[in-house]
Image (cartoon, rainbow, N blue to C red):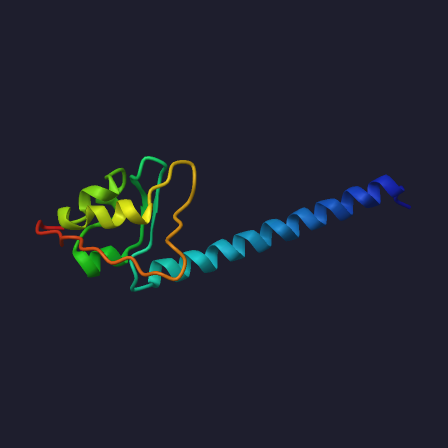
Length: 116
């Protein structure tokens, strides 16, 4: 018969395994949604450079997602609209993307005119 400490260890291990599986399943669902969305979904680092951009960027603007990794976000915004991004404070060091509550942020991004 297992000692109480062994039972607790087994119970903790089972819970950790269940949580790991649940997290993995959640990540897989999120990835499926993001990679099949027609919206452009991206993640920036604290300096405002792309660290992830969804495949839909190819269909919408003609860019290959991998070509934009490390590229500053503001470099793709039309010069007339850079102030919109600055005012919306999309790039906030040490935080995640937080658009103003209840507002859409509209700005222009030029299409890729290269071979893409």
